[in-house]
Amino acid sequence: MKITLALILFSFYTVNAQQKPVETIYFEFDKYDLTEKQISVVSNFIKNIDTSKVESIQIYGYCDDRGNDEYNFRLSNNRANTIQNLLVKKGFNQSKIVILEGKGRVVVKTDTVENLYETRLRNRRVDLIVVKKNSFGKGVYTSFKDNLKVGDKIYLESILFDIGSAKLTSNSKKELDKIALILQKHRSLNFEIRGHVCCTPEIYSDGIDRDTKERRLSWNRAKTVFHYLISKKVSKSRMTYIGCGNRYPLGKGDNYDRRVEFVITKI
Image 1 (cartoon, rainbow, N blue to C red):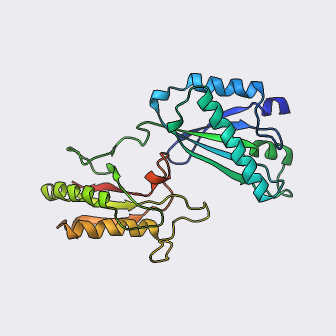
Image 2: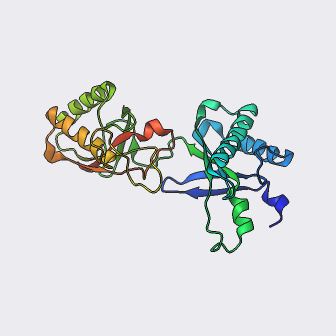
C-alpha cells in the first residue's frame, strides 16, 4: 500500500457485539494535523451520515509503539482533539460527542510482526465510533411496557450508579419504587437483573467496588437492586441476578454504562 493512500484511508468495519460502525483516520508519523485530502474525507463523512439517526460518537486517538508513554498519550489526545475540532467546525453537534480520549501507543512485539511498517501505519490513527439511535436491537425497551416477551430487555436511564459504587442513588430508588409497583401488579413476570460497569482496563472483566474492595462491582450493583426490590415486597423467587462486567457498553458515555438492566425470563 502506498503511503499517500494510507494517510487518507478512511475505513469502515464493525466491532463487538453491538455492531458499532467505526470510521478510522490515519496520521503521519509524529503528526496530529491533517492534510487537505484528509479534511476532505472527514467532510464527506459528515455529508454522508444522517445525523438525525446518530445517538452519539466516541473519538479515540492512538499512536504507534515508538516513543515514551507520556509523549504518546499527549500526541494521541491531540489527534483525537483535531478530529473533534474539525467535526464541530464542519457543523457536527458537539453534544453528540460523548467520549474524547487519547489511548496512547499501541504496543507491538516488533520481532513477531510480519510487516512492522504497515502495522505502525495502521496504529497512527483516530477511531470514530458511531452509535445509531435505537441500535440496541429488537426487544430492548426503556420502560416496563405491556406485551413483554421472554428475552426482552429493559434498560432504564434513571437507574445509574456513581463511579466505583454499588449504592443506589436517590433517583435510582425512586425509579425502583415505581418498578416495584408495576411488578406487584404483574406477579407472573420473572426476570434477571444484570449489572454493568464502565471505565475498566480491557485486561479486567469487572470493576472494583470501592466499599468492599472486590473486583465484583457489576455483581454488587445487580445484587443491590435485587435486595432493594425484595424490601419492596417483590418475591425473590421471581428474580435472579448476575454481573456482566464491562462487556456490554451502550456507547452513550461512561455514565450510562454504570447501570443495571432487566431481562424477562418468564411471563
